[in-house]
Image 1: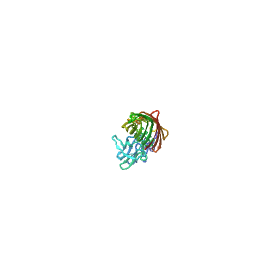
Image 2: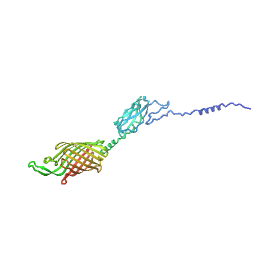
Image 3: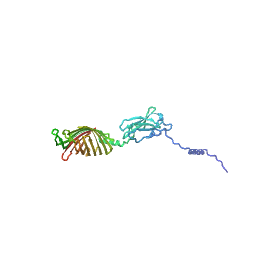
Image 4: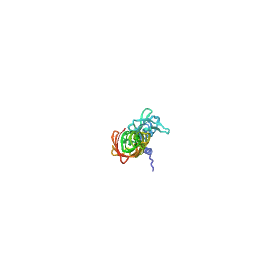
Length: 391
């Protein structure tokens, strides 16, 4: 015997609700106060989040460079999203950490992004600093990349030549110019000369004192580049010497007034070459001359110099000099010179030593002394001094 039962409606309703809830995906609720933060160095303004976000704001896409070459224009690129909201965009920069703040506007580039350019002469080692600001159409100023108080630093590595020049200038205490004055007296002893007597027509052998003195002043400027130095010297020489082919004793008084521009070229840090041109007036008229030298080593420290100088009719000198830095303030320089100056009939050899002292404040004193001779039987001393001031 079968029995019919009616279904329980409440139980069916509960089962349907369970099935529907299992089949419906769950949705995470977002708080209306949540919003995305600004991306530093990338997008610069907050993202919107549904109806709870504020008014529209422009955004900036920018990839900051970390390095820039010195002496070249520095270009900053940026993409502005929603540019209709922007009245003006500015690159705010400093040419160095202590330089005043400057601004330059962004302009639309032909290939798409906006560009701002820092002039080449303001891109110098060691670094450049910048930030980016936008001015919206409602007149508000926005800092969208870095800030004036905390600018982004771009390294500007110096070229090797700039580093070398800066190091040399630091050694010279920033003094590129130098004026020098010097004086020297040189005695070669006595040289025999054949002298004709204009009255009797006879000749005799007489010892002539072979000597001269030199006074000189000069100015030097140091670019410290490929042209390391250039200078001008002005001086005079007066003396007495046996002139070849002359028997008249009055012709033994010799002299020279000269001017000499000189240039020193840097071939390498330890190799420099000097060239000079001499223009002069001697006892026989206008004369030309030339000179040159090779410096091996530190030009402002210990180095070896080989050089020569020659002037028409007046003579030639060849020398070697070894400058030795005895201390921070003292320089010692032995010198060997072979010369037939002034207008002599034979070459003599000079052995000298010079001591220089850095007195500070740009002043330098030097004294020299030595001995020289043209013959084995006669010779004499030499003394000299110089004073220079660098500024």
